Image (cartoon, rainbow, N blue to C red):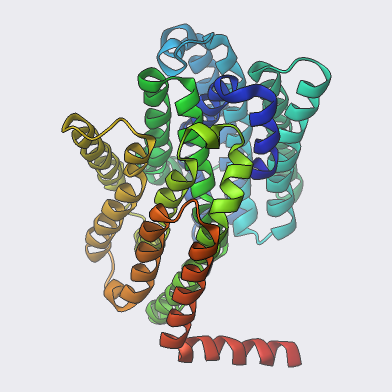
Length: 452
């Protein structure tokens, strides 16, 4: 829904006012991770693997909500101190609304982790759709009927986010009676808290890039960068959605067959990623300018989106390795390795600018795929110390090559939809021929399922 609503928001608010919305969205995407206390990563594991099971996981969801409320109050109290640094050139009071969104979405994310473990697909999907669809819709309705300002849009968005989060908590209670176990809650925190730096690294990187751009080049440039980051992350958002089923499947697989299942599913995920990125790149020259509206005229938003999408296959390989790390329960190292990946990616971009490259949002956007590359190398190193299962990443080198070739060539063809579509189709056909046995296997299984 963000992609559907954004064209209207950018056109109603204009480039500069949308810049305030862009910074606010980057803020609540970052803040959600802090307010969940990393429990989203451990609630699913607790429900499946721990003795307390679903009742203990429900209690953890509720305890996490109480902690989130406390952190929300603390952030609100300190808003006059940190607000001006985040939103340069505008009233920091507007940041109250993304804080409310943080709180509601933290409720929702922890609850969804419980629904994922319980295989409550309807609750998981419907609540996510409600937050995604009703939030932007409410903001648009308020702008059209009250006042066309960033504050009005964000107020409607945050009200829906908080409301959906409250409903998610109520559904958890209705599904399972909580039984609080202090030791298991501490264990969940022990697994979850070290993952906070890990989980927030990418959103914090995006916040730094957008907020820094607002100070260096103005709110309009910040809005263009944020839109490029948002649109370019679409393939990774789809990957994250599929991972909600992939991770529990790997967790539930018996140890003796986990390696084979992980390798088979990883190959499938990578093939899916190539198809998604090829489709994304083919449509980007048409879709991105439509979504970005007036911001696409003054800034290379399409090229930024393609640069960001380049990180998708590296994220897929990272997830394949990190599933085994979470199964081991030894996640504390992620509190160090992920911030290192983000810091090195950001440092390389800063050095490039200081060395004489222009302060272009395309240069800044390179930090995102660089982050995912470093994350992949880190995950391989961590996994080798925690699992005997090997994941031969290089066997899928053609999939990486297709995505890298397509996105880099797309930077030159960003304004030419026809050639980019033909290139996407050609690379996809070439990979299909190379992986014809794998594709034929999928088709045979699909035919069997339809016949059954």
